[in-house]
Image (cartoon, rainbow, N blue to C red):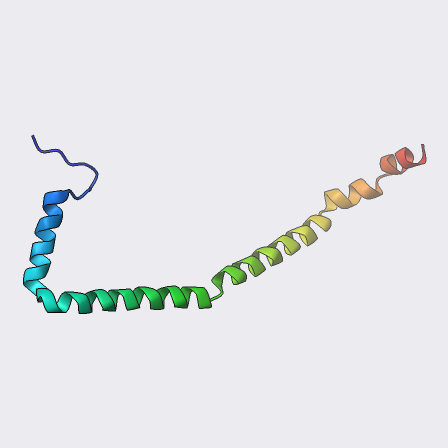
Length: 93
């Protein structure tokens, strides 16, 4: 009975993949490929750090909070609660 375990690759599959890669690219090209992949990963990380996306998201979040606060201040229910006669009577007592 064949069992599939959520896409995990076992030992025999890894050996087959390594053999196929060696046959396709040869022993001399594999270090060059690894170097190219490493350089690509470093460039990607550097670009992600320099993009300042995190600070832009924080700025937008703060602006949204400010607008929300302003809109809640203009809510007629909040305005009438502060100016209602019942609240002024409570303040005098």
